[in-house]
Image (cartoon, rainbow, N blue to C red; front, side, top):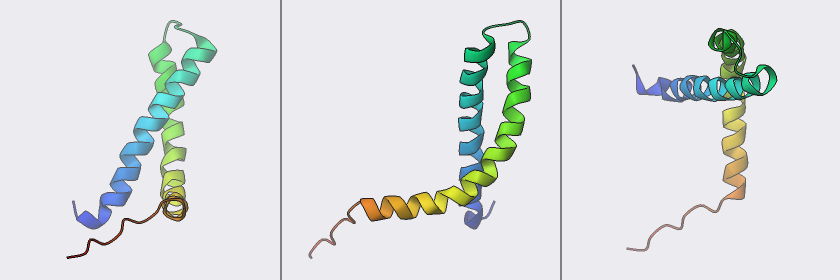
Length: 79
């Protein structure tokens, strides 16, 4: 895979992990450990991931800029 696709692949994987965790916690809190929990979770997670991935692609550059404004850049070392 070309390196230029790294930000999109990062967003894809991150949104997958995050939506999986968040949907699982929400399912556990709302339904409890019921029969068919995993199937319910997957059915909630996949549409969540489909929504989360494009959101990450849009929000990540904005977040990077905001963090860049809040953090001091390291000083160049004098040689």
